[in-house]
Image (cartoon, rainbow, N blue to C red; front, side, top):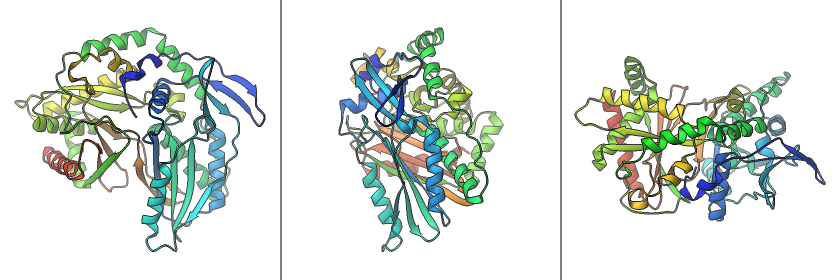
Amino acid sequence: MRRDDHFAQDHIITTGRPVTEESSCHMVYQLELSAGQKSVWVAQQLNPSDRSLNIAGYGAIAGAIDSAHFEAALRTVLSEVEALRARFELTGEGLHQVISESLDWSLRQLDFSASADPLAEAEQWMRTDAALEFDMANGPLFRWALIRVEPELYLWYQAMHHIIVDGFGLSLITSRVADVYTDLAAGDPVRECPPTSLAQVIDEHTRYAAGPDFAADREFWLARLPGKPRVASLATRVSSDTSAFIRESSRITPADVDRLRAVARRLRVPWYGVVIAAVAVYLNRVTGLRDIVLGLPVAARPSPVARRTPAMLTNVAPMCLTVDPALDFDAMVVAAAAELMVAHERQRYPYELIIHELSGLPDGRRQLGPEVNVIAFNTSLTFGGFPSTPYNLSAGPVEDMSINIYDRPDQSGMLIEFDGNAGLYRPEELRSHLDRFVDLLRASA
């Protein structure tokens, strides 16, 4: 999601118990916003025409989906997930998210199976829809569609405004729909939803923002980040527009992944520490910079209930790495693993506040290099026994470059995506960087 020092003053959260009120249609209650939600809100207000705050993707389900059961599963999840029933109100009393207890909604169903190229036409429809505006004041702030492309191939399309959910939250929603559909298709009782509470999650963030951990994290980051020279960017041009991005992707074979994991096991570090170390080494080789600061998207969910509750809570934690060409790659991996621990321990302090307080650093550009987004949650699901393959259409704004790492449990290897700001990178430049990085990663194993 977008990170900008303009948002800094909006990130001290104040909230309390939900306030219930009677509307003409439904009972509703109000909640304050998380820090991440306020950031998204301000970003959208600064640029109302920006659609990069829409996140979208689809799951390709290899089987004959029962549309009635599928819609019933979605309705069940819609009744459980408060974030899906949210809209946003700015009044004289401030900005609130208003949660309806119910929502008038029906599943959109499309059939492209008779088209000349059903999958291509379906993808074009989804990309067009993903660029449509959401009405934040009235909602709903999500769109779902079930698309038939073959008798035994369906696409479940999801588009949501980033203000209601992040990638982690979206994975919770998707997993729950898969479980409910599976139960309905089998004629079994629907398994219970694990307890969730958006109000409790917001309250946790409020107490953090008012407590000693917040102050300690602030001092830690302000002491750690000054003195870094230039941002390690691979771009050769300048752009402030984050509304469009280009994507290049590559896949690491299962054999290569096994070798990377072997390095991690030998050094007793998480497997993605190897990938992050390779990113830092690549940036050093291309830019010549020794001090590299990467952005690490983090869930910012310290409690069990937060880890069960779909919401927009994500943050970006800085990762400060010094690349010494005299050291071997193993040493770089160990250093990256240590920084991962720091980033996770201090992951709740809003990155926007760091940028606000360090905005006097040289050249006025972003304070982080590329973001490295490790997709560690399960993205391979089954719907009534039918396997689903996920495809990401848009994960939010790309200020410079986002490197997305998917280590899928289906033995298909590791998928690596380079998303580049379209104003900074040409497709051939992005492809060249990706190919060279993959070569480096393979050589590191």
